[in-house]
Length: 282
Length: 282
Image 1: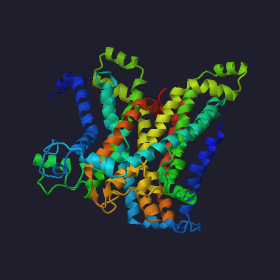
Image 2: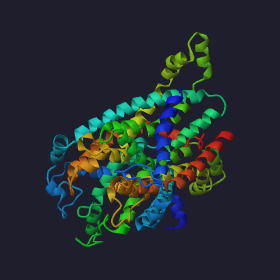
Image 3: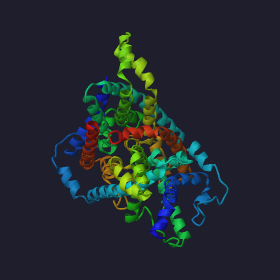
Image 4: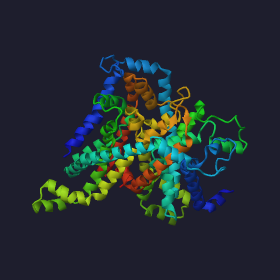
């Protein structure tokens, strides 16, 4: 009974994975998708391309910066949400919206918020006299600001996800330990930093592993907000692979670019297997 | 304030401040969609107008445009159809596979389960280039059948993983008793196990359906004609004419589509999170 699912997975995940590797070592194009082995030629040429190097660097920067912000924020948020209070369910729903709504639609909402002329952020800044009318920053039009915007939207999307994962972890912490510490005279903050946060370490690592995958392999946010621009300043590995392999019809180069996702995925799979193994043993 | 004052002010105020800040930051884009949905264009595109209030009376023009003059309704139909078909395929593949893995004796069932879960981590952005060729060779390009073929590749692995957990919680003795009473193993599975696991199967149905509505990369890659679009691509790509964004109807579409999906997803979220955190929380 396991066979149909296994066959599907082999054919539609395993097969394409092998095909991606084969393309990366060929000169296949959409008009001419035959296999002609060219060795490491694709890797040599993409490594020399400034766009690719920018994409590689951005992918790492976006992922790392977003993860740091997400972990700090969602730790705070999960602790604030842990104890029951009136309206907790509704509060949780509002907080979860960015994760449970389709990301392509959330991203287009942000595109409106960050619009070059009608941005609400710009309006508030002018209203506060922080910047002058018509001299306002172009949120998605200047490289540094565009990078910050992409990171912001990634954080916005992932904070809810990490928060619920951590909530699940918090409820699993045995309550007698913090209670005993409270009887011994430890205050809220001391219990928080000495007991709760250290005990959340395994669950924080789960949130980081998933968050890393979701940010590193995502192309929706970048594609909708900036399409990699201005001047490749927000290009990431997936968005450049799409621009090259699909829009530019260079299957071989696009496939070679997307293969650069694999080392990170393997690393994450390794850590997850280790966690699973630990759970199996204990 | 001194250190002592901060301690006295204590956790209550800190929690409230944290929650209030994050609710505003995370839910704001959806509130902003709501405002734009009902604003007249003259009001929406006037830089000096206060964007937080209705300077002119609200209007239903954007909704009329969205429902009667764009492909929106069509995209909703396409997405619902694909969703239903993918749910059926997913159940057909995942339920028997999960059951047989859950009943496999020894450690191999669990290990196979983890292996399948890991395939869930292989992202669309790694597979979309080879899969675009598979879809082209099969002649499915530019039709919804391309995504019907490919979407189970991310719904099946996670569904198997979720269902394994449900099936394992059903005592084996129940089936043994049924088999002593003359049912075959398959009969026991259909007449006994499936009815008990309704809630698990319902979780998979909701999970699969929401993932289908949230997908972006594959639909963008495989389908170009407007009439065949899925809602997640149609809204951000086809509600933009050339460089002109119809922000009012764009935001209306984002809001109207997001909220039902978010409500549905939110109801079942805790079960998905349980699937994500297996291994780190017990």
